[in-house]
Length: 404
Image (cartoon, rainbow, N blue to C red; front, side, top):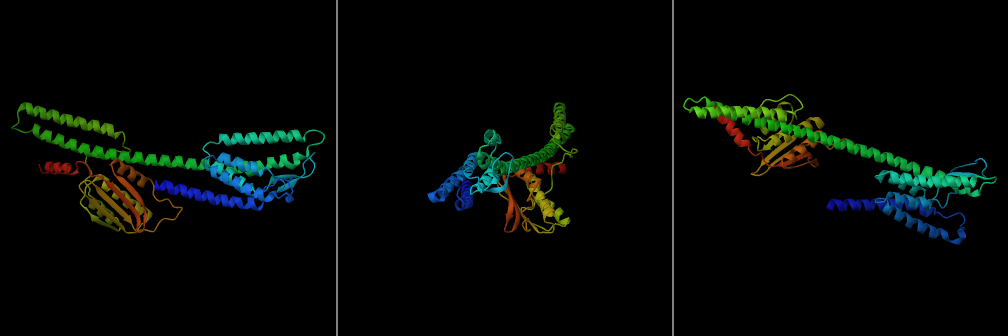
């Protein structure tokens, strides 16, 4: 809720600043029709009316950008006497103004660009431009026909057409191209995030396959030991053999089902046995300056995955910088904090890629929360998640079978 309020305040301040900037030329050069004489005293009232009209146009430009553009376009059409250039056209009396300029021209350009940039659909604006240009073109042709063209053709309709094309339609087209590029980048980013999440789910499926396959292998091993026991009755030996075959068949079905998600070759049926301390030690042997505190002997797949990816990012984006790994464990939560004491990245440089997205998905699926970003101490990754359901039971079972 605070973020929403803060964002709305920023938008209001930006709109206020935009209104003040657009009011400056409208007040200095108020749009007064050419048939109003300066002695009439309408210039001051025209400046006030222009400022009020600009305020209304900017106010509605976020929710209804097309309405704001049409307001300033109508107001800017009052005076088309001054322009970028003047030409003499065939059969028309006097010079024709091209690209009219007045106090509302900057507002027309800016709000037309914002309309193309903000509007989700281009059809309403395209229809509005078609109607305006079609009407103006028809009236221009009608008034310019005949043995003696109407003077309004060269004084109003031709300047109006050129003004709409240059001051409104062209900026709107540029803003529309900008909107399409932003939408394309958003779609590409969404695809990248989806691919990273799918990749991380594949890794989780592989871990599940390895762990469950290992447990089933232990069950089959124990059943085989019972089947070969000399003091066991025949019916019990037969039941133990059926249990061993069922465990083997279940292992094969598990390999078939989860193996579809694998991207490479199948891994052996052994669960991850590496602890956080062993993972950090391998990083030290590779030349990474890393310090580990807390639960060093923790054996948790999610914790090891977070530490591994964070160390990979540290060596990739800030080689040689020291890294601190802290692992804390309570009865219902594991907290992994990895801090890379490096300088912040330049503004144009990306701050994380598929690795952080995959970690976020992994921790989320584990029922935890994941945050990352720059702090005063460097780039920090913090993951909080519940411990695995049966890590110690599996370890104890493996040790007992190894002893047997």
